[in-house]
Image (cartoon, rainbow over all chains, first blue to last red):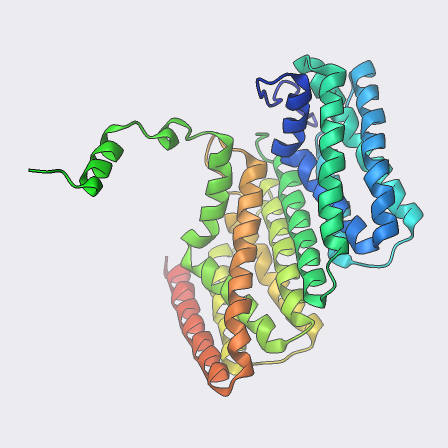
Length: 185
Length: 196
């Protein structure tokens, strides 16, 4: 009875599967918001953590996507909401965290959402090329957001990042409500 | 008679089909509904602005703890509503929230940060329960949620921005007056909820 992600709702740019994959991550808040949260978290963690996440997340996403393409199974939709809560909560809390834990979070996010993407892309017929487009877009996106947050030095800017994390948690809670109790849209 | 450019614009606007009307149920409509909903109810607006002003009056760390607390607990209230739980007296509680938060601003009360956060969080549940799940038919729940949370957060930021005049003596008086107006409006909302 737990809803799963719809498989046929990928964006079609008309420019081929690579650009469809790039467009997918940009217009899919289910994927974009947790990625923003992780990029914010990586930026708060400093340059070293940020560099690791920059490479680990796209790699894990690619591996997860390949698994999704191969096996055609993805976790329930509600797990997306958990990504919002965990990563947004960590950004809002802004507590010191070991790099190992941070990297594990990037692996988990990439594997989970990559697998969902893989299933969706197989169903939409854009397959591996679309997945490559998504992974490339993620690399660029994470480098921009993480680089921006690393460069912030004033205390109020760090507070602004934490507030953004709390908003992501709030959206995640409502999203869980929609997927578990409300009408699935 | 020569037509002015403005007249031509009005004529074109009246005769051309509106793209918005054709996409009423689209994804963007969910985002716009979410952005619009928090500012469509004066009770919600006043309570949100009061949270921001009170945070600014209390200073750091309340200036960011309260606006961080509110959206998260508000969303929890919305989630409870979506899961089908029933909370009695929601409209009364929303009116009381504007009344109490307005009084806090008007009297410039400075309780312990935990007390302030719990008070704000308590009222946030009712605001989320009442407004967080009012999704128009056919629109995206996730995009509605993003718009709703962003608009509510922006109202808090507006309150904080307003509250920054607290550094001047005249500003303190102006904020206290604003708090009194919010409290009066809250009393009016509460009366309306009780009598309705």
